[in-house]
Image (tube, rainbow, N blue to C red; front, side, top):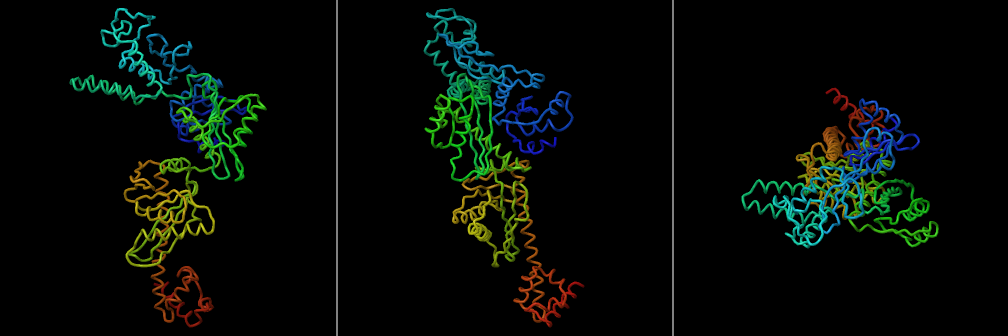
Length: 597
């Protein structure tokens, strides 16, 4: 649909959820995706079933929320469906709860799967978006740690008769005191550590058991445990879209600022569940204002439901003044803290990522946005390289040394900004020296003229060209990201990294690097060909009686090329101060003869 053309191009290729709103700003559908760009765009291409067509016709606004992985997207989707009860979700899908893993608080605890937190006793882990994954976790824990699975209410003294599970070596029989309660609780702690995200102790146990079977030449059994270790590595129990502590009310604030523009994203957790995200964009900020303090005051003094804690990674000035204003106006206390525990750090980082993507969506109208995002990630840059300048050196047997600069803005060539550099001197060409000269000329001039620098300097060459260019950039005291691409192997070098980067041929980042490199290469070869042709013609000009090196240079400098000089009449040539009537006649005859040839 045409009205969504811009936003559909800007949607990132990250996992996350998307929400469709109607003209009344009501959420009518919530969906999850491994790749938001592909999934959302698929709604607007090709033929759809009647229900989907009806949904698409009612879409007036598209929102999205980026997550770290598809699992988090599934959990967040479930939260949002329960919150908004979208009409089309009710028609098209079930919004059931995801399972938890419970460790009971009995004297001899058990571990099992449950659908809801039906009682407050015990410890709950999850939720798990994949019920089969939860089953696998329980199976591995019970099998490795030999935990009890029976439902008997066990009380001291533990002197029951061991059941069949013990004789099958599936249980350590704590009910019969064949293992001490202290040792059994130690095994339960190992299980809890694993469910909390610490897999190290369980992997050590599994590895030890695998080695035992391997030494006993029981290779099938060892292979079975090897597969269990692989499963343990693949399982990630530390979900954070929904926490076991249902009383948490926190906000996680992410800030992305670029010059006079700032984007803020707030992720809200209420009763332990991530249930909302809000984005804001501010432009034309004054350089001396404390923007974030102003934003916090404006937002939270007018927000209806306040969190207990606001997690924010950057420095916040006037914190006490903010606390005082909140307490006076709202009659409650609030805290601003830097995240320290893993869950809070991850959600704060997620808020920052969402703020940056929102900034890109609103400020960058580039069809190459995915190329630039990948390039930023590959080159470890702090921001998207909106302006890239690429340099290529060309020479012909040490003569006509030339450099060319191509320029891309938002992933698209801007040929009005291309530049060419003639490099003096002949003899054996030294690419490194020539690269240094071009870097000095280009960026010293930008410094003097106080013009903006590019976000990225790209060089056609290997590590040597990159080091040579970086030497000049460092001498000028300029902080710019730099990279080079070696043409034959198509490998990429970046500063402060010994090993080169090898990208697949399908990589967006590689395609944009190749494109701008090829443009610089083409431009430098064009310049080289012109210089060669002009030099050849200049040599011929010097053979005309009365036209020496000085006058030949004067003619070429005045008109730019011999082609232009050839179009002049004898009278026009005679008017030139260094030519006169006699030389004009010689020149005119020469060109007529040259044209006929």
